[in-house]
Length: 99
Image (cartoon, rainbow, N blue to C red; front, top):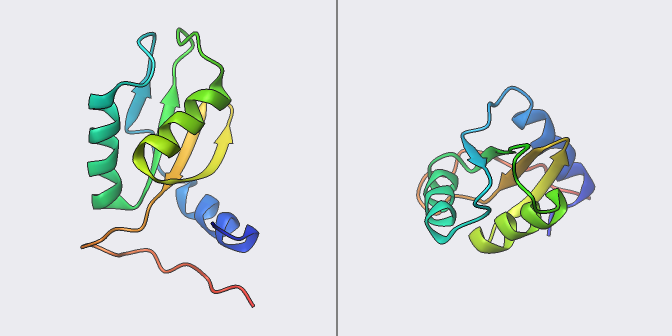
């Protein structure tokens, strides 16, 4: 679980990122989850856009993405989901330690 301080840090790190995946009408699929997991391993922090034609609740989609990739849901702002998962091999992001 991330602390508030760590989530704030990750939100600031994600601010300049562009969404690299889109969830459309088909919803969340197994193939998409595998691709997102690979991207998280490479980048640790990504944004996913939920398109207007998606019929599911955006909170449900965000939770499906986080649970399906074993990632932390950092933020859901508008229709953009920010996910974080520490990389096994390419650790780049150092989270602040809470006191």
